[in-house]
Image (tube, rainbow, N blue to C red; front, side, top):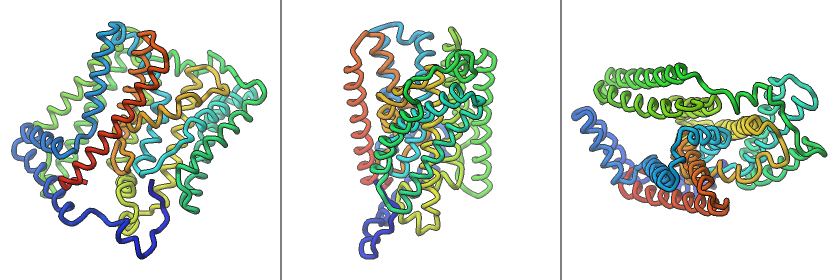
Length: 434
């Protein structure tokens, strides 16, 4: 884990040193080669570039996608109901709450840090929602805002302690795990459990709200059009600047592939209840955070700090601001995930945010491709990772296997993901792509 404290003059040049000049030049040459292949050979060049990147260890989300397909095929062979539309609808709804929490975990992992308290923060936000809305009879919107504000305050506290005193994030958030669990119990009071009315819109949103078929297809089309327009705009700007860019044919084929990837599962889910509004919210948060990470100065700064904090500081990046904003976002996503979980359960109790919530949120980010070493990963890591975890859980439930098996399998998958990340990192270094 990195810390924001400035290294001593005697060690800063070594501990914060960037990759060697040879490695750096090799990485630049490899990127230029990729651009030339795509520009000169179109789709064929893109395929050749992808193969070369895989050989160099730059495998991205490929392992988790392959693993997810293997899991689905295995469980569908063991129980045909696994891939039924009804079960997949339930699976998507189960992904939303913990997946939202995992988005925040991805952000802190990009900095090479960790937040162990997201489960307790989500439970605290659920308690604030239930007490405010049910016991104190606040308007539901006010109770939700109060719960989210608690997440913001927690993130500000973590950011202050980390940047001001240099306390490792592991220690800060471990203390937060215990402290905010105690605060959650205090907020709930002696009853320990508060039911949220079923007719409240947050419960209806989490349990019963599904998109009409036409709206789900419209969102798919709009998403593909936005993707194509974004790619085309980027290509035109690069061409105007004299840089290599994706040809129009490549953009069209990628957009068509995306259309198929989104339309087929949407059609299948619509065979029963359809696409849940809560899952759509989760997907929207993933897309929004991916946009901010890849298309804004703040996002580039997050990757820079995660890659080399001292180099980022010397480049003029406000490192303190990056750490604080990321901790705030992580705790806020945890609070929002707690609200979604409370709505789906229609209650807040002493077990809210407990159990395996914390571990699943962290495991999802790592399994989805976020590196524990910092600087690598994307918001889509949360989506892929939580799909893997919930698929394992759903499949084992259909097979009537004990939860102990689920824990062991999830732990094995997590360990495998970390091993793959470590090996690919070594390969990138040896090929000059670190």
